Structure formats: structure tokens, C-alpha cells
Image (cartoon, rainbow, N blue to C red; front, side):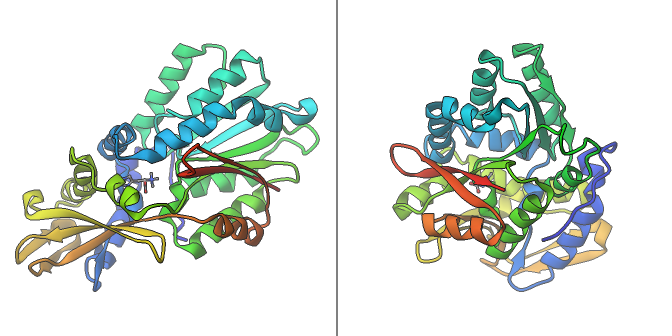
Length: 334
Ligand code: AVJ
């Protein structure tokens, strides 16, 4: 699991630059070429992803929305059990589209909680904070511009004593875990588990295995937003590392493999070409049809999720799904 140290006083294009440089340098000199999907989320990438969530083909968001909407009362009962205050820490909050359903309900029920959205995009966190302050001026919110790993590390360094501490409820929605390898996913939840106290909870979303055509379409939308999202990675490298990728010479390609549950995204070089990356003093040759692997969006089974909980020191206590059984939100209890 690559740990990215972030100085939250700087903006994300600055702080991740050396990390981006390293990963681009190694990823584009390997065969097959690859770039890590976490670099999708510069401000433009975060904006494009927010649009993807509204696409007809991108069922994940609607399915999870339905789950949270249907189960909001039950979730509040679980979070606020024993009448203890709770802290809702959302890793990768983005525009908070789905979380606002919960915030709205919790607020209307006068629940005693603080919302701590964490996101790698400064613009995303600023917009979300402004929106929430407008909708619910009295809601306690502590926004953090940070990456997941740092935010988790902070959980265990809290100064409040155990007795006075609110229950921590970590939200990790949207099947963001799908971008991790199985080992990374296990290590990620282990790290969260080690930072929590017994009784603390994680509410996390998993996209489930289903008809391959449904999954394939979600990453091949007709409007071409997923394509723009994927290509934006090259634009970012042009801007931040002084590269000269010609975006019109690369195409988007996605492939879902139902035996492994992996949806893989690629950028495809449409001709033989050489790209110069000034800041790395590197030229990268591309063959005709050569790919850069940019993302894995893993799809899960119920057994796989149960195993993940067990391997990372959690108990899977609740399982919520949408009416089509496309998606699951589950509670992992420490
Ligand atoms: C935000 C990681 C859940 O993998 O479905 C959307 C990102 N990539 N379309 C996903 C994404 C292409 C998304 N996650």
C-alpha cells in the first residue's frame, strides 16, 4: 500500500507532485505501462467523477443512494446506540451526494454527531463544506483536505481519552475499495481496525458481481465522460510534469472479466509515437495500440466481503443491498 504523506497546508497539485513524478517515471517505463488510479482526482478529475455519478450507465451511485435512503433510520439507530455522540469520518467525501441523505436524517432527528469529511481535492472539500454550511448552518463539521492514509493515521493519535471519546463511524462509500488489490484492501481495513476501539464502526460500500454487460456499460458510457475522466490523467501529467501527451492520439478502453471480478481501464496509443516528459527528463515510446493500464474497479461477492472483514479484524454485522442486488453497504464492527 503506498503511503502518501500530505502536508495539508499545501494544495494537492503541489503536494502530490513528487509522488506523481515517481509513479509516472516507474509506471511508464514498465511493460505493460501503468499509472495509478489515485491520480485521477485532481480538481478536474473530481469534477468529472461527480458527473459520472449522474450517468444512466453508472448504476453504482443510484444503487448506493437507494440503500442509504431506505436504511437511514436503521443506520442512525446503529450509530447512536447507547446514546453516545458519534463522529462520522468520511474517507473520500467528494461532493457528499449520498452522505447528505444521512446528514439530513441525522440532523432532523437531532442526533449528536460531528461530520468529518476528508478528501484529496481541495476544491471538492471547499464546495462540500460551503454546501453543508448553507443547508445545515448548525451542523458540526470538521473538513479535512487530506488523503485516506493520513486521515486514518490521525484516528489513532487522538488526544481525547477513551471514556470521553465519541464513537467513531468511518464511512468509506462508493466502492472506492474496488481500486485496491486484495492485499491492499486487507491492509487498508487492518489499518483502520487498528486505529479504532471496540464498538467503533465502519460503513462501507461494495459493488457486487452481476451481469457482465451491466458492469461493462458503467465504464463505457455513451456520453464519453468516463473516457474524458481517463484521459484527464494525461492532461494532468502534461500540466504538472511538463509532458506533451497528445490527448487525441489516445483512446479509452475498458474490459470487465467476470471470472476475476475486475473491470480494468486502459488508455490506448492510437499510433506509434514518442511522448516527452520534461520534468522527468524522460521520453516514452509508444507502439501502435500499446496500452497504459490506469484502473481496476473490482466487483465483489458476499463471501469475498465477509472474508475481508474477518481478515482485517472486523465483524460483519449488517448487510444492506438495493432492490436489484447490484451493490452492498455493510457494517464492519470493531
Ligand atoms: C470512485 C473508484 C468507485 O471504480 O467505479 C468511475 C471510479 N472510474 N468510472 C469506480 C470510476 C471510472 C469509481 N470509484
